[in-house]
Length: 247
Image (cartoon, rainbow, N blue to C red):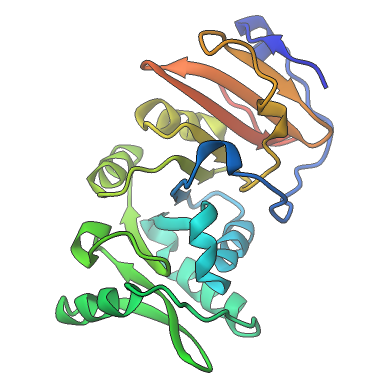
């Protein structure tokens, strides 16, 4: 593994020949505290892989402590497909109990709002709720097991919806076959960590980074890691080697 300064020439000369692989999360959010993640899902993306990662958040609400997905934005034309696939993915899964003390209060708030929501249940009752068209500020304090869902039609609308959320997202996982769409979001958002077509990948290649004022790129056998300063914020992106990179 090597670490180099990022140049425009390097971006133009990147060649990938390893298949795009979506893997189960292996580590690590420990260097960025208790992050909150937003997922953005476009029509032309690997919906099944994104649904897999969303289902892992719902299976264990306590995983919200270490960077689970709290808000999802889905391109309008695939919203119902996404919801159907998510429900199917969780049908056979064993869902952990949600012991968060504020979850019941948040559930009551949603009832008062008459919110359109999907309840995810195990044998002991509701353990997670995905709610349409409401932000976390409407529900109360950020609570394990509450996921807000928004539909969008354009990148501009997507960015505006994310900025309306009361949560301060540290991480974003963006799903689109064309990276230029993802980089438009990366430029506009203040998250420090961006995953493109993947999620919760090993962050250890980012730990031996150069001074914060420098941009660089490094790779391992599966993933491309890139760090740069954008609008005064040091941002890191990770994506699978072999995925489409569009300038």
